[in-house]
Amino acid sequence: MQVFKFGGASVKNASAIKNVASIIKDYNDDLMVVISAMGKMTNALEELAFAYFKNEDWKTKLQPIKDFHDAIIQELLLHLDANFMKVYETKFEQLTQKLEKDPAPNYDYEYDQIVSFGEIMATTIVSGYLNTIGIANEWLDARKIIRTDNAYREAKVDWELTKALFLSKSGLFYQDKNKKNICIIQGFIGHTETGQTTTLGREGSDFTAGIAAWCLDATSVTIWKDVPGMLNADPKFFNNTELLSKISFREAIELSYYGASVIHPKTIKPLENKSIPLYVKSFLNPQETGTVIQKDVQYDALIPSYIFKENQILISISPRDFSFITEENMKDIFDQFSQCGIKVNVMQNSAISFSVCVDHQEEKVAKFIQRLENEYVIKYNTDLSLMTVRHYTEEVIEQLSKDKEILLEQRSRHTSRFVMR
Ligand code: ASP
Ligand code: MG
Image 1 (cartoon, rainbow, N blue to C red):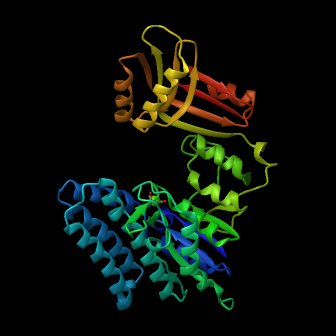
Image 2: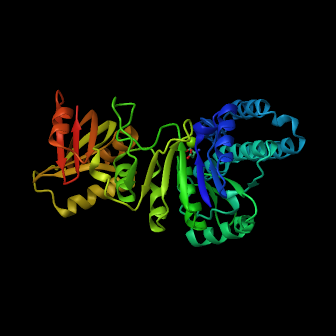
Image 3: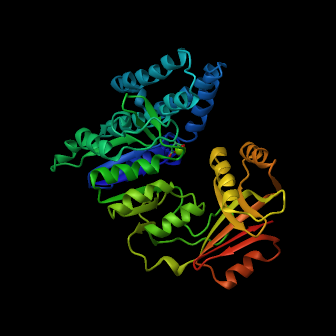
């Protein structure tokens, strides 16, 4: 059995959904198909959740969401299928009923109850469409399968329970060896022990694909994207990108750690643990080979990879009394990073100062500075970028740093990093 994952862009309108159906049709294996919310629906649902929570007018936020899905249904001619329409309208009704009740005080909880409907609608529509064109499939409810704790918006998976639930809800289905069996399940969402809906963090559908593959011992996972595979740089910032046709799990984890955004970082670990290969392929050119991420390591160093992050701030922190930076100081500083929810991208220390480069999320950074200001002198530079080069060469670095002011530089054997302006 193979796991497929289709993200928002691959199901953003009726013709995209038809394309997904044709990809599914071309495979003869059993499939577990993970699907995200359509297009930008998660963002729209976030706004809806926020308005609802603030007791503002949520109806004007809900209407465009309903209209968007309705229009796709019409174009796919699903409105002619009374059974489908009943299922679909019932699901929307559940969302409306939820919104008509007063919100609970916990925003993250309410967020998950509402935003999860993007995936519910997307899977309902794709599953319904596949049925009408003769591709039989089973719609699975991740709110009964992916078991998590109650850390809403960033829920942690209970692997063993999830595996047991996967096997009991879909295992039987896959036992019929005489036909191709297809299950459709939502990415991104799960449920707690008491049945409350949770989400796994933004862009978490890739992770769901990893979880499903781990639980069901899939032969492979394919993430279908609007790019040809994993590239050695983001085409938004670089002209001559190259396809990384084969890389190791280790390299994929490194790249996503430094900020490459093709696959969700949590996806790799469960696949690595069971040596399940991960393919990244283009849904626009499905016959192309794309990238395979697997145990093999020998190809990693062939092509340098570039990861570029904008909107960085470089903060330098020194004790007010001009004393050395000690382990005690570091402990205070890191406590504050953790409490303010700031992720450190690069750090470097000298005798009397400690420098860190972080994403410039203004509120968080302001809070951090305010908390340390009494004891430390804090200086910073904004509007910087952070460039990471894996498998760099001197030539590459010279080229990149030309005409740039470098504020901080760090090199290890395989990776070089520059904070620059
Ligand atoms: N729909 C969710 C999001 O946009 C999950 C995903 O797309 O992976 O964050
Ligand atoms: Mg999405």
